[in-house]
Amino acid sequence: MRTHYAIAAVVTALIAAPACAQDAATVQVAESDQFGAYLTDANGRPLYLFTTDKPDGAAEAQISCTSEECLNAWPLFTTMGEPQAGEMVDASLLGTMTYEGETVVTYGGWPLYYFVRDEGADAPQGHNIESFGGEWYLIRSSGERVEL
Image 1 (spheres, rainbow, N blue to C red):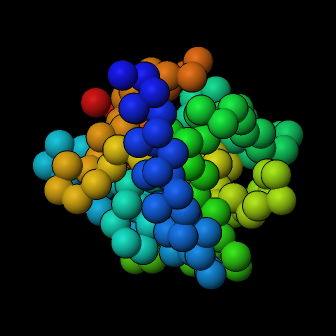
Image 2 (image 1 turned 60 degrees about the vertical axis):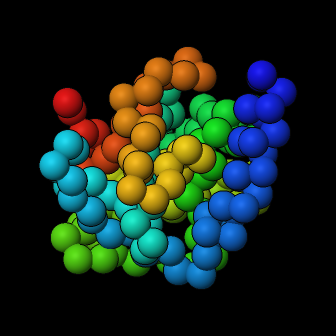
């Protein structure tokens, strides 16, 4: 069973890869009855923060989801240009950092991730999940995690 899940995660990550790396990634806000307003990419895919990461602040942001298994389940939200702020997104909170040669989009200093199980009307599925030594949360346009 684990092998099937691992294969499915890899296939899903490969299919999602073109959506992860895009020219001038755009961050937008979506809203749901369950979660309220939260950040998404330009296609409406939810974006998450990981509590064990170090947000940019007094020191440089650090990514702690570094294993292949973690990055297959939680792909980084990357860009090929300067990230753009959609409506209701605070452009001053947008930033970038470099990880493994990729430009990762940050918000409020937090590196942003996708969750491979987020698809269609069932998204977001990754909120308030404990895995890989930390917790994963949707993020508000204020830069704070969604608390439920």
